Image (cartoon, rainbow, N blue to C red):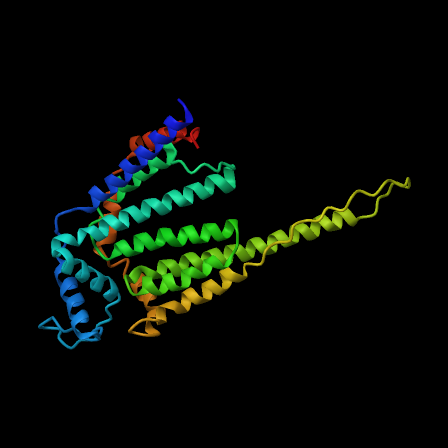
Length: 313
């Protein structure tokens, strides 16, 4: 096939993949939480304030309430103002598209920096991976506030990998994104863990790389036992390791960013409370039940398809 035909087919397949993501975003409103989320968002818009106590419950009225996802509830209510509650799934469609777009960006960065392939056309590998991603995660793409965490986790991964390939000040964008995340969904602690882990890995790489250079220089400067005078080779200047300065600043900023929140500095340690609830969360076991339904034959089929499509990288 000609390059033009390949380009048309690849772009057509990618558009179909995005359309599938849109279709999976439109679902019936089966989530009971959406109604109190819409009501909370409406209350916040009307009063220009975030409630610090329960204002809707009869038995728990006046109980202290940390509503982490107040920002998403306002966004949800704004969508309802446009087209009613039935219009709120549009948010999930937008989230699905953003996830696929940044997955493609990550994949293209991998091809460019690791494999030396600069083409931006979606390959069979990324197309298959995107369809697989949508199929596996469709049961959680249901318009819940966690869609914000799905999108921002992929965006964080893109910025971290881009900084690893070429360090720059762009990584600082993760600080305002973390502020946004902390006001949209309680899983913002994932962003903190991702950035801190990347920073620790970058410093380890920096020191190990520095030790390697020192060792090479010692070997090169070691005097030769051969008495014959040999011509001195041209000095090889080893590349100096790049200190992860901007990533370290970003990590500190991401840790402190949740304090930019109506509930203040308590949000910095709030993820610890969320993670402590994982064992008692019934959804954890429901999610595990979903995962174990994949048996060995499914895994082998996935591996076979990846092996076949790997040549198309």
